[in-house]
Length: 105
Image (cartoon, rainbow, N blue to C red; front, side):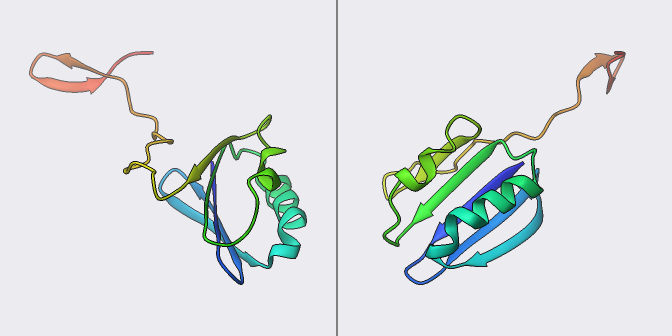
C-alpha cells in the first residue's frame, strides 16, 4: 500500500492507494498532521511507501521519524517522472506451444 501526502499552504491532503485503486482520502490541517498520520498508519498497517509533495512550510523532519517503518519519497521540482516506486505483481508466464500460459507453481 502507498500513502501520498500533498502539503499545501492551508491544508494537507492525503490518500491511500492499494495497487491502482484509491482506498481513502483525508484532508486536515498542519496542526493535525502527526495525529492524522498515526491514525492513518494504524488503520492501514500494510502501507510500505510514503510519497510527499509540499509547497507548504512543513519540514522534512516531521516525516523522517517514519523512515524505519516506511520507504519515504519526497517529490521536488527536481524529481524525475514517472516516479516508479510501486509495481503491481505480475503473473509468472511461460511459453507453452504457441500460447503464453500461467506457469505451474
